[in-house]
Image (cartoon, rainbow, N blue to C red; front, side, top):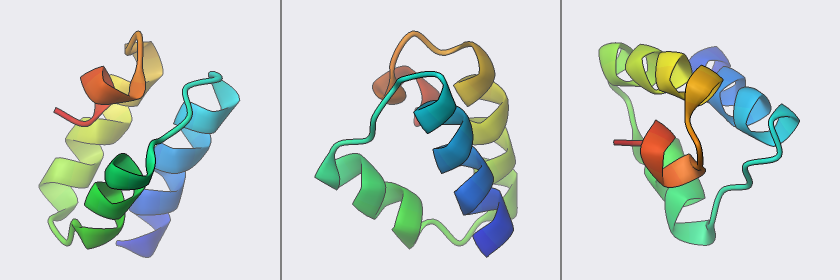
Length: 54
């Protein structure tokens, strides 16, 4: 699961969409692979980090 969290963070960072402290904590606290995969998919096209982590 750590790899999935890192992938979400990397995509957002590469797209210039930084995570706030609260969003970073939300990502770190997530232990559900299905949710992480959804966030990764959303991170590819999201306009901002809020949109990616819904």
